[in-house]
Image 1 (cartoon, rainbow, N blue to C red):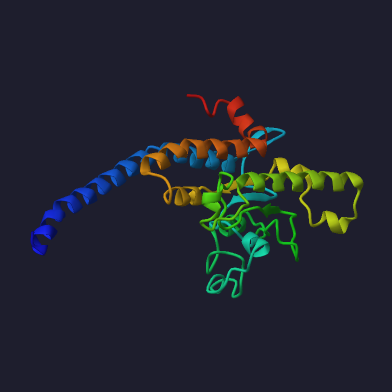
Image 2: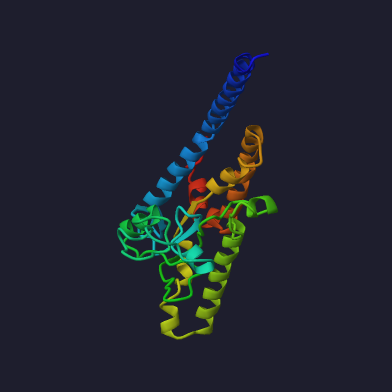
Length: 262
């Protein structure tokens, strides 16, 4: 058999393989698109939380959040990875901050724009111990974080071990220590750098995480396995929301007033 014949004979197999890969990709894309209603519900519900606040007289409009507590990965990291591992190099930070800002961005993140809109200062990273102030919230996001706790396969791909469950533990520590220090009557200088205990029930809580889980999964799973893993990721994210007691702080009034009625 000549080289030309051999090559020509292989072409149908290559074409079939590419065709199967494309079909598999589009099937996965269609399946993932089925999750869009869930995402849209989360966005819509977040808008409701932003627009309605409960006070002693019922419900009023306004975004008067006293603090923001954020959880996530590089999409919203404002210095966590820089504090825990190494500083994020230029050109990140050069456009707006004109210096290394701890962000995977040359300007501002979506989280920064949210803070500006609410007339709050940019969030300090929880792990940053130098010059930080948590009066108006804290940022637990770290570049490379995942929803699920890391196993060896994911860790070896370069993702960091501070997954969402660790970030939640850090939040709980901040909340508990803040309450303890206020009860102990610490001086006003320390209190001025901490959230007020009552602000934890009034704050805006934001989550931006999950892309690294999918990125890592595609390196050692089939498309079908990746798709099958998504509901588990959503369950773990939902558990994180429950642990922070958002269901108690924010969701219960909407459940009680029938906003989630179907």
